[in-house]
Amino acid sequence: MNTITLTITVFLLIICGVNQTSIAQTSNLTFGIRAGAGVSFLSENYTIYYNNRDPFELKGFSFNGGGIMSISLDNNSSIQPELHYSYESARYSEQFQRTYENGSLGEKVTFITKHSVASICVPILIKMSFGVPKAGQIGIYVGPNFGYTVSVKKVSWFNPAKANEENIITDLTDVANLFQIGAVVGGDIRILDNLFMDARFGYKFTKHIDTEIYHGSFSNILLGIGYMF
Image (cartoon, rainbow, N blue to C red; front, side, top):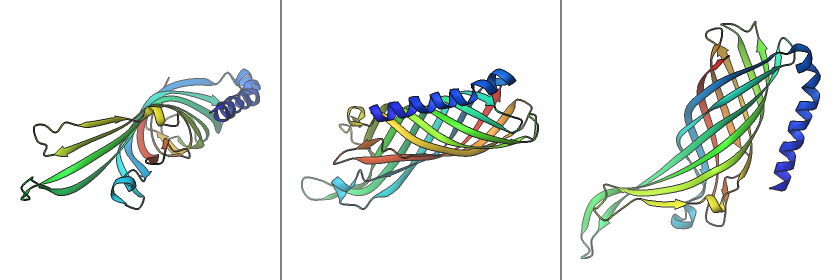
């Protein structure tokens, strides 16, 4: 944890030191907001402990949103730090047939398990833009993504459920890796002078949880929309 914190601090200090002169000379500092939604993928072996399965990939809904700061270095390049809330989830389902106490078979039931992670993320993106900053401008970017885990939960339920079968909620935050390191790559296009759309792929190098029973790391593909002030 201390190593990750130190890495983030040093990285931010380097960026501030390298770009302090450029920012002061150009005064080209802009802010914006952005939100995106898409598909998240969970590479995990949660069910190995229970079902003796090989590792496999699950998918679910993903969302993030927050603020953007753009620091222009020249006409074509900039640094784009972001601060946003991120939600990633994935779902696994397995169908079986109920067996009653007398041995008779009942209806078919689906057992569903949903894993979700909420975090605060700080991507620091290096961006190259093509064209003037107005409608039609295209940009591409890549950079590291530092995250802090807020919560990790597993929720399981039966469908259809009996009257006495409630959702099983397991909070795994206490055994999660609080600090995450990943990467983001993507691109955007301004559809109006200040309004843009983007697509990005995010990958976590750090497993959000890593114990003898649970192992898992998320990646996602997001489509977003934002506005620069």
